[in-house]
Image: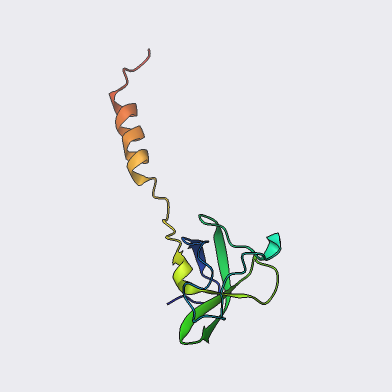
Amino acid sequence: MFYVGQKVVCVDDQQPGKYLPPGRADYLSDAPEPMRIKKGEVYTVSALSIECETECCLLQEIYGEHYYACARFRPVIERKTDISILTAMLKDAEQKLPAHG
């Protein structure tokens, strides 16, 4: 699903244990702040693992060796900025300007 180095965004920071069998919570609700994931935050996958038949990822920005279910994240879609349309509009506007003389 994901790969090491991929940017992902958290879509679920609630419901401890939702993705793993009982007793194997992938999110510690009482964890210290550096180990908590936050919905909407972007993270970098630093390792992948299978825990209880669930795909899990280790996050570079989270302190400690704590894996989170990959289902809690979605890939960040990075779009390359293409300014060619803006450049074309600028050229078109310059051509329409009256000549100063």
